[in-house]
Amino acid sequence: SDAVSTSTTQDGFEAGSPLHLATQGAVQIAAVGGVPGRDERYDLFLHAMRDLNNPADIATLQSYHPTYPNEPDYSSYTIEDDPADFFDRVTIGLVPLMFDAMIALGLSACGMEYHNGTDHFDGYQHFAKFKQTQFHGATGNNRFHPETGTRLADSARFTLTNFVFVDTIGNIANFENVETDIFQDGEWVSVKSRTFNDGTTIPQPDLPPLEPNNIYIGFGLRSIGLLLAFWTWAVSIGFTIWMMKNRKSRVVKASQPIFLGLILLGCFLMGTSIVFLSLDDELVSTETCSVFCILVPWFFSFGWILSFSALFAKTERVNQIFHNPKCRRMKVTVKDVMA
Image 1 (spheres, helix red, strand yellow):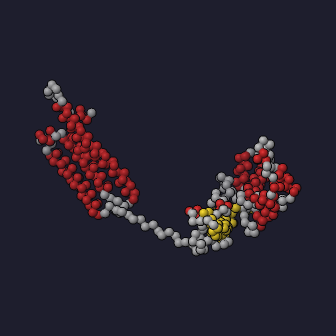
Image 2 (cartoon, rainbow, N blue to C red):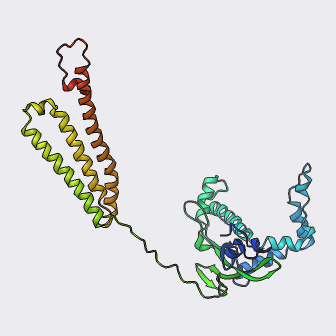
Image 3 (spheres, rainbow, N blue to C red):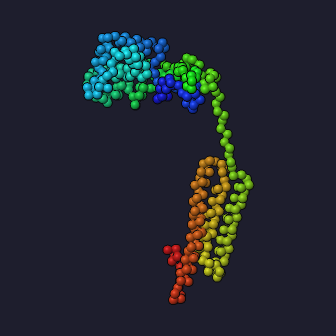
């Protein structure tokens, strides 16, 4: 973009360096006031500005230049030193756009006075009128954004500058800045063929379409994972049914059924997490895979907590019974352990 000046290439780059190779054939887009010979109004602006290159007008312009007695470096510039350079500078770059911006401010102020019948208005009123202002100036058809007041891009002018490699002198690669396209009146106009990185005017082919290499889990690993999950479910459900049928037996009572149930529930949940891990976007959508990825740690962590907390609770129950120095009969309920 025009954040980088085209003068960047004037001194060239080291031949074969990354800057040389990257700049060769590159294109810069920049906002400009206009292109000489392509718009009558812009040509009139250039002519009027260059007509100021006379002693009387130069003296007037110099009188407006601020002076700083205590800072002589800021007061040393005079137009008389190089008037040709001064008037060349004020007719290129953003200066014509600034000229039209000042005209727009003046027209909007006149519009306020004409339509409101008063020459008194505040900044808000002036800005509101400025956004409505439209006119053909030196830089084209000036139109502004109705909310921000910014110059609308399709009403401005832009150029494409092509950095063309010329030759190598010593170890320095030299470039020529060539304007190839102009954006004016809402459309691009080609002025000259563009030179690409390989030195030809033939556009380079686009990069080939990306072909992702999807590494899926595969039928074999998925089958093993689902088999383990179903086996975990079957064992958990089977032992749960057996425990319910034999809940009054001495062995099951001594093993504390509520904790056995928690261990089996935890194993069932951990087995379920294997199912989620066994499915990928070969079988289900990407959104579904995202949901499964979220569920895996929840099911596995919750199942692990249930199983091991039940084992620790059973151990604590036994610990309270056997750590009984007076060997008195005591009853440790589930509530006591869970608390």
